[in-house]
Length: 441
Image (cartoon, rainbow, N blue to C red):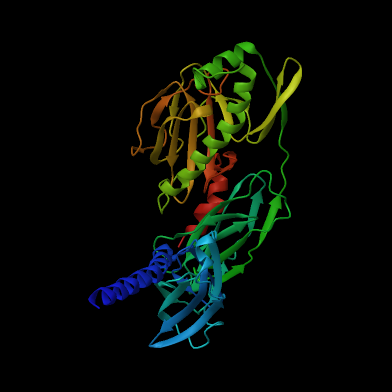
């Protein structure tokens, strides 16, 4: 009797084990859902798109998003998928990017102030685990607005200009837009609300492109305003530049020592890929600018210098009678004699003093409000990053380092990382009309 009872118990245990094992296995194979905002939202306005990256190899059966404010919840999005509790482990669902609309259009009861976004996902597997992600946001419903000064803006193609603007309402960014390029604005010292933006009108910008001032907030609202302007088209030179094996041997092995391949192929890579990378490095220095002008007088051209190349010369490189490349030279090549002292063209702060590819030994001086001067091909550098320099103070000697055939100074200027014709900044009258007179109080 006891044996028979024990047999039944053992059989029951085995049966339960047979039932429990696959259930436990299915439970073990289940997965949680990883949720991440993409990008992280900080503000929502009237209509703000929110993105979430959803990662679960089994997919999800339920995705929900809502906004919470002052104890109230408003549903923003809900998607449902039929549950699959058995064959889920065969699935390999790729990560998905989910987007939904937040803001007062989707949730009419929202008020300006703090709110919380919540996203919840239930995994499409045996366990059906629920995971959530949430973040605090600011609700911004007031639109931005902006106005521009009443000056007449005469702008040279390839040149610079300054505009004063006054943003108001709810805004987080304001400046000038020229085509697809944007130029930051900075607070004007001693002024309440008014801001200053230097901007470039690039040499290759179509002359029917209208610059506008803009103000926008991080919730997606934007306002623009026009100002009076007139564009003066300019013609830029086309030049053939003969290069030979002697030149290639000098510059290629100086810039790319130990490189492999024939000299012409290495030169073309330097003249193209390295040029673009070096120019990006220069453009990124705009983030090291001071929020005020560091200068007062006009800028200096290298004394007694001969102009060997002008701004925006379009150069065709000729090798053995054949055109092999074309690049645009965005600066002035100025020559005097070998190892001529190179001086700061105006007061400022050194933000680069090191070799830089095609520019050789290079110095960049920040003059504030995103205006910077660039000095290339130097034989020696006598300043370091962080030094404060004065107009006319020696910083190094001219040379032929980098992509230079002979001793000279490459001089250029940039506004918010866009290179501009320095001739305007060498002109005291232009500076008075376009900058100084407009800032008089």
